[in-house]
Image 1 (cartoon, one colour):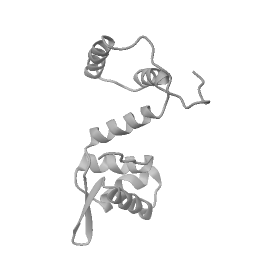
Image 2 (image 1 turned 90 degrees about the vertical axis):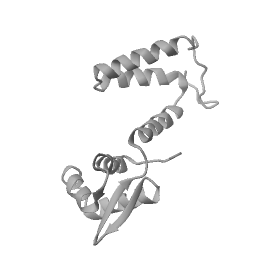
Image 3 (image 1 turned 45 degrees about the vertical axis):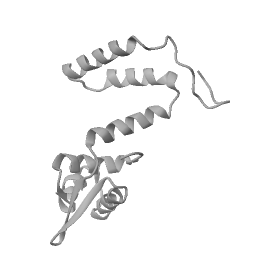
Length: 140
């Protein structure tokens, strides 16, 4: 699952497939169309794209197609977030993570895990990170 790029629309499809583990295109359409306004053809196109990308497996069951995930949800989330953070200057990563922590709901267990991880990282963290902006494009 290296380098899998999923569009925002495809994420919505994947969330359904991950939660159901096996789902027909009819069920994906029934679940997505009301909240998105997407047509049946649009949702089927998204499913085909995810199969082509290697994110979903499909099998025929009579006239229906059943879709199953080929990629793990957490690994895909981790890869997407790591990829996004790799695209920005490393001097801005801390602020971006702080913003996420302050704006998204977290459980007490999540917070305890974050605190423990940060305490471990603190022992080896540099005082300041070097800028890794593109030459002539730095605003740090």
